[in-house]
Length: 139
Image (cartoon, rainbow, N blue to C red; front, side, top):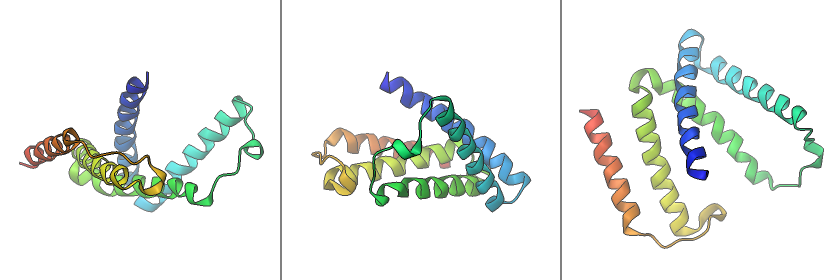
């Protein structure tokens, strides 16, 4: 189930990048980023109402954990900035490379509260394959 959801997430992100990039081409980058997140906020407000979830009932979380939202804004912004130049497939490949490299570093060090894991050679092989694929795509 988790693998299926991860694949679905990748599909949704790819479609989102294309829509967001097209919107950014029609209006300016900054306004598009604001409108995209406003639409996301409205969507989640509706979901919370339908599921009868109140923000007042949520457990307290460290303010540090809310930085994910800030990072999400920059993710959309950078994708919108580069999608018309690089295309969705190149952004996805480069993004995957960045995610994998960062994840390896975080897991190796146990930073940001991640479970510290021993670096396995297969992860480095996977990263190398991704880098080779990106190199081929750049040709």
